[in-house]
Every structure is written in structure tokens, then in C-alpha cells.
Image (tube, rainbow, N blue to C red):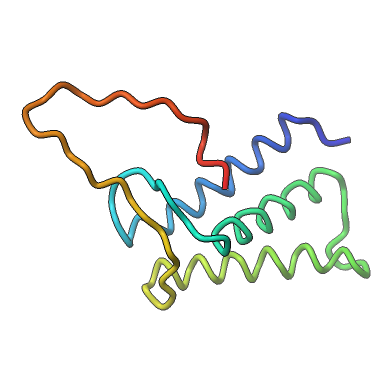
Length: 110
């Protein structure tokens, strides 16, 4: 059975993977993204969770999770290479000569 910690870890890892691909597109914290980004991150996380649950990617409908995760990773690779441009926004504000800015927000959480 999947725990909340498993789910949180899978979403966090998939979010980090996506953010790593977006670094080639800009700098700073990602503050806005389109639904395609959310979809791709969720597809990667779903595959990872199904692996934890013991699915077999070579068996019938289970193959669908693997195919979607592979497609999502291909999409992220294309974003990283500049072949696809998703609607993402980075926080590029820089306070020069002022105190550090402290922000609190939950994890990216696509």
C-alpha cells in the first residue's frame, strides 16, 4: 500500500526532475506554469508510484504508465533543448542593496 510519504516523495522527485530541465530556460524560482507541466510531472510520479506498488510494465494495461512516463520525460528533454516552449515563469526579481527576501511556500507541487 502506498503511503502519503511515498506520494509526497514521488511528486517531489518528479518536480525536481522537471525543474532541472527548466533551468536551461531561465533562472530563479518557478512561480507559474501551464497545465501541461502539471500533467507531465504527474505522469512521471504516477509511474514511480506504480513501481513501488509492484506493477509490471510488460503486462497489459500496466504498460500505459510506462509509456506515459517515457513520453513525459521526452517532453521534458525537448523543453530543455528549446524544442518546446511551455508557459513557465521564473521569479527573476533581485533586490540589490537590500536585506535578503525570505519567502515561505509549500514545495512546487505541480
